[in-house]
Image (tube, rainbow over all chains, first blue to last red; front, side, top):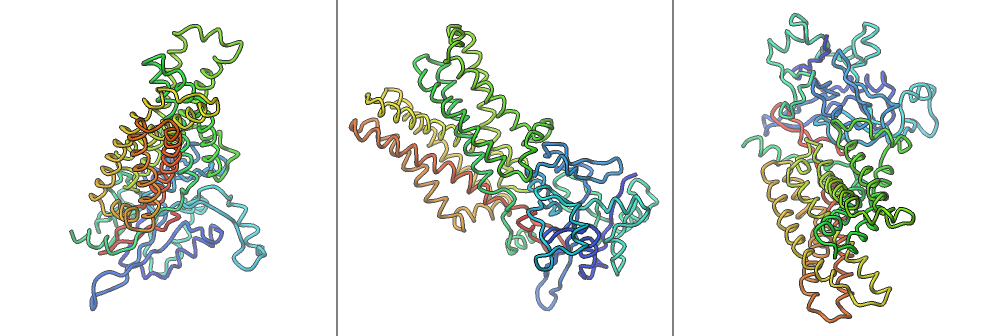
Length: 199
Length: 317
C-alpha cells in the first residue's frame, strides 16, 4: 500500500477551497498552510491566462526532509506517508530549507485569527500545534484511518483531486497517471514524489 | 532556452528560515576550529609553534561553545537540543553536533594537560602528538562541515555548489589565523614585550590564505551562472540588496585591507606593526561573519514549474 495523490490541473479553477478545507480540518494557526494554491499568469496578450498550482507535502518516496532531520522526528510510514513527531522535533528548520517543494513550515507563534481572544474552536484545535516545530500535510491521516478522503479531496468542487493506492495498478490514481502521463514536480531532485499532476 | 527566459522574469524569494543566528554559528565554529586547526598542525610540524597551538585552544574552545549557543538559540525547541545528536547517519546537523562535541572534548583534554596535576602527561610527547592529530582532524571536520550544512539543502543551488565548503573552509582558516594573531599581539602588548617572530610568520601565511580566499570566492560566484536560481542569489550579492555588506563589509574590510596590512606590515615600524596586525585581524573577523551572513541571506530555492510558467517559493517555506 502506498498512498498517492493525483491533481488534475486542467480541472483546477483556483477557488482555494482545498486550501481553506485544509486549514479548517487541521485547525492551523494564522500563517501556517499545509496546502496552498499558487497562481501565476502565463503567455502574452491576447493569449495570456492564469494557471494554478496546488501544493502540499509530496510524501516523497525518497524524502530529503527525513534525510536531513537530525532527531528522527520525520518518519516515513509503511504506506508512504511522511509524519512529524512533535516530541522529537527540535525546530532546526533543516527540513524546511532542504524541501524542494514549499510544503513545510515552522510554527513561529500561535495567535488568534480574530482579535486578541482565541475562539472556542481555536482553543481546541491549536492544541495540535506547537510553537517552534515543523508542520506539514499528512494526507489527513486521521481521516484516511476512518476510511474518509483527505479534506482537500473531499472539498474540491471540480473533482480535480484524487487519492488512492499507487501500488495497485488498477486504482483510479494509477490509471489516471498512466492514461494522462501524470508527472511529478521537480523530478531532478530524485525525491520521487507520490503526488502526480495532470495537465 | 525558453524556460530560462521565463525564470529570469519571475521574482524569486530568498529563504528566511535560517538567518543571522545560523550565520553566527557557522562563523564562530569556523573561526574557533580554524584557529585550533592551524595551531595543532603548526605545532605538529615544529615545536617552536607552541604559542600558536595554545592560542588556538584559547580561541577554539570558547568560540565553538558560543557558536553552539547560537545554533541552540535558532532552534524552535532549544531545550531539546540534545536530540540533535540522534541521527548522524544522514543529517548534517547531527553530524556537525557530533564533530563539534568531539572537537570540544579533545580540546578540553589537551587544555587540561597544562593544568596541575595532569601536567605529568605533558611530559609524554607521544600523547600530546596523538591528541593534536585528533584535534586537527576534528577541527578540519568542523571547518568543512560549516560549508556542508548549507550544501545539504539541495533545492538552494547557491548553497549546494561544491565550492561553498571550500570557501567556508578557506575563510575559517584565514579568520582562525587572524584571531590567533590578534590574541598573540594583545598578549605581547599587555606583557610589554616585543612582538614575537611568530606574528610575522603568521602574517605571511594569512596573506597567502586571503589570496586563496579571493580566488575561491570569485570561483564560487562565477560558478553560479550555470543555474538561474543561483545567479539570482549572486546578483543579490553583487548588485542587489546585499551588495553594500558584500563589497564594503566583506571585500574591502574583510579581504583587501587585511591582505594589504598582512603583506606590508612585516616591514613597518615596531609601533604601527602591532596596530596594523590588530586592525587586519578585527576587520578580517568582521568580514568573515559578513561572508556567512551574505551567503545565508542570498540562498533561494528553485521555483516550481507549472503549465508554461514558474512559481517562486515563499521565503518561509
